[in-house]
Amino acid sequence: MKLGIRAALAAGALFGFGLAMSGMTDPRRVLGFLDLFGNFDPTLALVLGGAVTTTALLFRPVLRRGRPVLASAFQLSSLNHVDRQLLGGAALFGVGWGLAGYCPGPALAGLGILSTEALWFVPAMLAGALLHRLFNRA
Amino acid sequence: MTLSWWLALAGGVLIGLSATLLLWLNGRIAGVSGIVNGVLLPRAGEVSWRVAFLVGLVAAGGLYMAFVPGAPLPRTDFPRAGLVVAGLLVGFGTRMGNGCTSGHGVCGLGRLSVRSLVAVATFMATAIASTFAVRHLWGWP
Image (cartoon, rainbow over all chains, first blue to last red; front, side, top):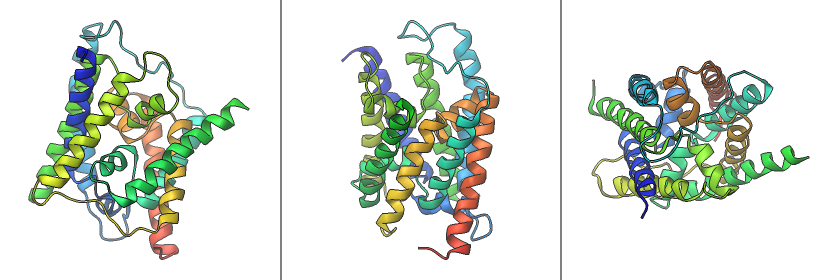
């Protein structure tokens, strides 16, 4: 297996492990946070806080290297403006997230344990992505 | 702080470390919706690392939940129609907005991206409104 593939596998495994450890794989905990007016559960804030603090501290030194270790260049989004697509897309994503409590990562992790909810959510998520592509070709 | 709060913080740090690893080694952003989309709509040279990342995520997440005592498990009783609608919205919205909680949230905010900050504020707001409407206005499920 190429080194880059192994690295991605390791990163993914760490990601999945962190997701499961943090409890974000249970949508009830996520909804517990989003339900500000109900039985509020701050867990999501702690997870995001831990994650963003880590990346905010480590991304800059990594990027300062000029290039990644196993590839020729960083592949970062060059978009830096706020437009209707961003706002509309984020808004729609949030509605869906707040409905069932799943975003892509935790839903996929659920597949790892053959969660029935994930088996319904993930195909629908893929269908939604394909629908967007369909509308964008027109 | 309870144990679950420590685990939440630690889990978050691991997520942040994994994103750092992917950036440092592969030069890629650990945005799950984008990674998935690159497998769904494949382009040459763009697939293997994504499949590897997702296999790692699914396997590690699944193994943790299966074998670690006390690991939080996914819910099982949400109405399927709701799961489908939610999935469609998340799938469509993350493509339209070019990111999700990991892409815009963990990575975008870590890069101090204003675009991601706006995205995060937006999806947090609509998510909170959505949960409120569904649970407290509609009383569903």
